[in-house]
Amino acid sequence: MDKIVCSVIVPMYNEEAVIMETYRRLTQVMENFGESYELVFINDGSRDKTREMISELCKSDQHVKMIDFARNFGHQIAITAGMDYAAGDCMVIIDGDLQDPPELIPEMVKIWRSGYDVVYGKRKSRQGETFFKKFTAKSFYRLLRGMTDVDIPVDTGDFRLIDRRVCEALKQLPERSRYVRGLMSWVGFKQTAIEFERSERFAGETKYPLKKMLKLAMDGIMSFSYKPLKFASYLGSGISLISFIYLIIVLFQKVFFPTSATSGWASLIAVSLFFNGIILLMLGIIGEYIGRIYDEAKGRPLYIISELKNMDDRQSPRFKL
Image 1 (cartoon, rainbow, N blue to C red):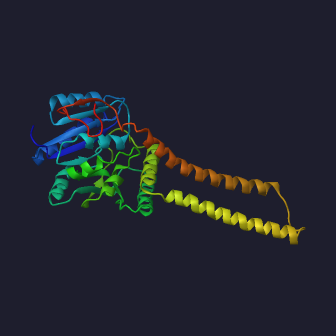
Image 2 (cartoon, helix red, strand yellow):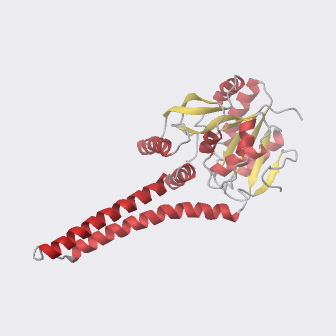
Image 3 (cartoon, rainbow, N blue to C red):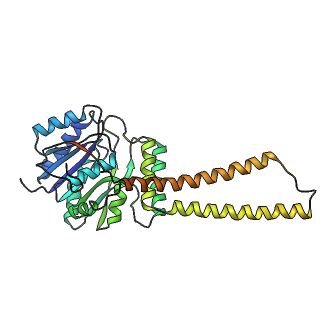
């Protein structure tokens, strides 16, 4: 087998409307580039015809490889599986919806050859997205950067090129609640950005609705920061101090000004509900961390593969099939 210079990792979930155009553009870019390559499609438990369409591409083009999950394990896990099985000297991670331009790959490879280990795409603009999504995404990246000691670049997604040695370093990180772009910053190496205009989705619907975006945000914060726990501790200490001061004031009034000390069930219930809400908030934050510890303790594999195509008997460094 010829040595593969560049592996293009493409996670897919219910993308039958866009897969042929994605394949066409990726193939055109890589063929014109003139380097040896492979297109690694990960079918993340799709319920449409995505799996069948990738299988047909594998039959007609040996450059196309397929990792077929036994069920839906999630976007970040699909990226991880792609990196586990990719054979290239460098890997490009790109979503299948064509919002990130495949035509940028040759420039990424050129920058990689100049000595950089990670070349991440930085969005100058985001077309076809609502104001709410743009605002929340921008706020989240800056909040995460402020909460962690790891330098996670703002306004970046998973679209990036990584060197083989970065990939090998990432394989040593077994955690399950994965925020891959944060892990890539955590492992270090020489990194730089390449700016681009993010286009509208070519076809189909977004696979990251608000619920999944919130989960990804929680994974990012909980994986790289203990500040929520510190916040809960500081908040609890502050409320305890305020409550103690208030108790002293009430006792002082009761002893020295008994006629001015008034009682009221409404105010008592309001204060009680407020403090109970704060306690539940702190318990929820602690519970998020405990839940992640529980997931890690179970030791289950990150993913289960149903089928591999055109993989030349490759084995995952994490799990044997």
